[in-house]
Image 1 (cartoon, rainbow, N blue to C red):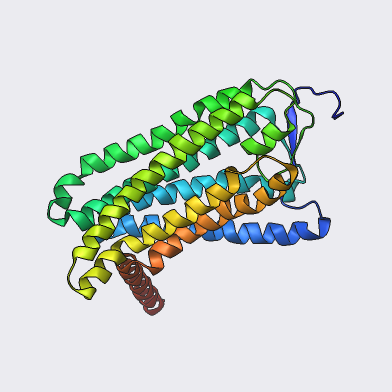
Image 2 (cartoon, rainbow, N blue to C red):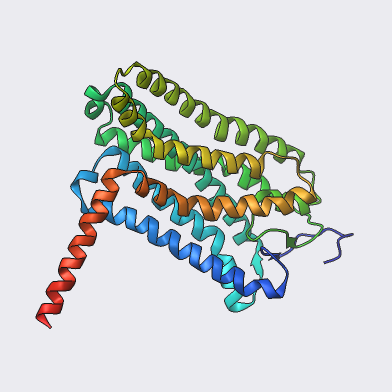
Length: 320
């Protein structure tokens, strides 16, 4: 496409992680491994939560929603890399591209508010344990998760509508491995100043800062309550209940700040691929690992499941 004369393309070409032919197969193998690991880890979390009654608690209900979100987020971003290697087709339609941006931004917003709801859950568990079952009941959990899922898709709707109003692009090549809002804005020859300001205000203040502040406030109260515990054992036990969630929160907010809240430039777009890859690949695969390795209840459920599978295998062997 002639970059001097901007037009509205019917399709975009996704550049991918690298243009080097020699790297395509290793990248494909890496993405397949990571994607399958993400599916396996998060599906295992969902399976354990469904099978074992001691995991039928609000915290694991929130964790199940987080696992569903991680599976969806990985699928929406990584599927194009896999399809491109198999079919050789790097193109995607304008409609699909914009829809991918909307869904991915919505899922990211959902994840932030779900983590905020989880921080509130930890706050009640540590600061008000005697009333925990009264405050965090099934109705409240269902209401919180409903609000979290609806919130993300509503808050990103205006961004999607603004993108559909773009009528002029200098190029139809998106310098990314999936359709993301910053690379698309970069190649548009329309005035995107309003969209940039809107994303900065809504993205920074509403989507990121408010959930971050609510999470921070929860942890301030949690830390104050932990410091009031007289025994070191009690302090460690109280902090241990929050350590997995706190690790995930720090990891996600760090990658989002590095990915989105920097000036838009060519160098930024290149480095943005790294942070996007980490955010869309590493975070979903690390979440189940963090909650599995740092959570006694999950490890106990996994141990029971493994023992049950081994017993079933031995029984089948004897029958054969």
